[in-house]
Length: 251
Ligand SMILES: NC(=O)c1ccc[n+]([C@@H]2O[C@H](COP(=O)([O-])OP(=O)(O)OC[C@H]3O[C@@H](n4cnc5c(N)ncnc54)[C@H](O)[C@@H]3O)[C@@H](O)[C@H]2O)c1
Image 1 (cartoon, rainbow, N blue to C red):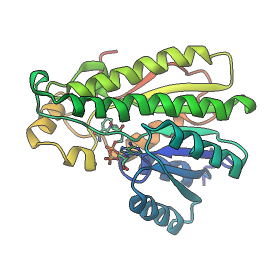
Image 2 (spheres, helix red, strand yellow):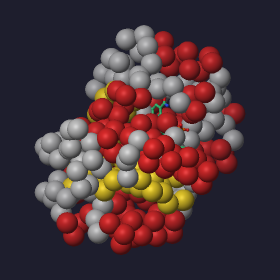
Image 3 (cartoon, rainbow, N blue to C red):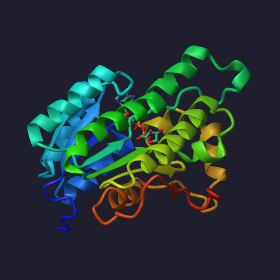
């Protein structure tokens, strides 16, 4: 086994499903101990069982990433239990309104998308930094989206929330650039998960047609890119949004 994450503790938000679970599995397969932060207790339990049945170390905290008290207490509980947090990957997210033009977007749905995707990213970042500062080491990765760089028609709330995530890492990465803590984002195009299954086929087709490789990204490709970004090897990369778009991104 390649042991890039031996003795490391990784918090994965949204880790009960989709991208988060795949990234967690990859880190666990290389020796990391995983703590899932997710809001659905049943999903957390099932995911932990899956990790354990593979012989990996995993546990969970039930949190809503848009609520600061949830994040603060789960981060503190994790640090108290393991003595440190080396890695935080923020995968918790919602897609919000899709196939809806801005003129018809309900403001509560807009606010909810921003609350989970942007406010949640900020809260995770803020409390991850507090947990990592004393050790002067950390790898923080926020999952953004190609929608934040390029914009997807019919998905203005989501696109705006992910553009905000990209802005967060540009700013905070620079604040911590002279420490051992890196802050980056990853901007995937379309990956088949419960999130994309919840969208109308036309919206998914619109996004997939924009990918020059003309195929979806796989969970393995996401996990592999993310694992490198949060590994000790990625020591000269911060404040950056990595591409995972099959050629769609132009910057
Ligand atoms: N699937 C894609 O095509 C794609 C592409 C680009 C970016 N992303 C981003 O990747 C991340 C993961 O998406 P996914 O496709 O795996 O979705 P998913 O729906 O499969 O998983 C999302 C997870 O986040 C959790 N979650 C949602 N709201 C939460 C909250 N308030 N607090 C805590 N947990 C919460 C859910 O319970 C779920 O386990 C999201 O940020 C998404 O925007 C996905």
